[in-house]
Image (cartoon, rainbow, N blue to C red; front, side):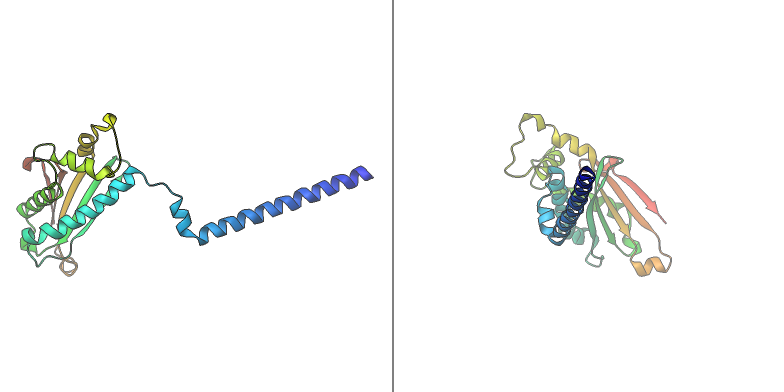
Length: 201
């Protein structure tokens, strides 16, 4: 009889402990959800995150500085950003801008491409390695020491980062059936003949 009572008591204590554990976990989760800043502060930032954020800033600034001179001040506000495609393991810097139909030409697109690259790499040493130097500096925090094992980072990034410029119709033009668009893309160190151009209608 006493043994049976003892078993019941142990079972009740175990059940109570289990319930208490669930309650504590629920409160902890609720507290974590309430303090979103604390949750975000606990997540580490990688050099990849750092570089993507820098690329976002740089391409937005470059588009603002260079495109009005190239495409005219009647253009729409450029949309810019950075996309990482994990399937292709590639980063794309994109710039999309609305222009009148007559301004959406192959030459305008490739000219804008070259102007953007020149702006992004303006602080880099001149020469064929300018794009690699720029990308290395983007992904490397100022106070970070990488050592010799990272010497080839710039060269490898050049192969994995491309710029894409799209000249699009404004929304009202697209609604009225104007779908003519031009897209040009390539690596930041692409020669003029290596810039791929797509014409859409």
